[in-house]
Amino acid sequence: MNWRNGLVSLGPASLRTLRAALERSLGEQAASVLQETGYASGPEVYQAFASWLQTRANVADPADLDATFLGQMLSEFFEATGWGNVVLEQLGDGAFALDTADWAEAKSDTTALVPSCHFTTGMLAAFMTELAGEIVAVMQVECLTCGGERCRFLIGSAATLQQVFEAINRGESYTDVLAAASAGT
Ligand SMILES: [Zn+2]
Image 1: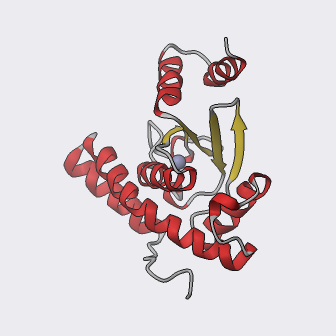
Image 2 (image 1 turned 90 degrees about the vertical axis):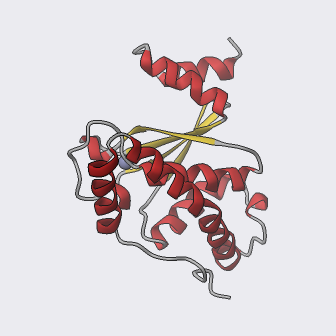
């Protein structure tokens, strides 16, 4: 079976247009609508990843993939599906960062005031939940659409990301919070 079976492809322009139209009609609520839509796609994208991985690396279940190769496999898969290259980095014991300097949802838009890859944030939350086999949360902390050099998505438990959210609101470094959490202090 072709691993693309069941996947629908949309180009960056359609995502950009969808966000602009939703923001015009819904204002700030547009973000949660896009996240919900992305979340619904996560399990389907994960199934495509599982099927692609079988062909690419002869690994039947993504859970069996050697963690050393996870970042590389995710990057190849997201590039093959048109999203872009990613780099996976562990931050302390409790979180990962998924970074990309070339992401479809952020293409050709540098006018946002806050990180705006809402569809991706939802999609990754469902995708990573399937991959981890437990509920995983995702928060975007940097974005190309705000003029940043990359989009950065933090991946961790809801409790860990709540700590990150509070640290950012206090004007503190979230990487310090994650390092302290993993040191047990
Ligand atoms: Zn972004």
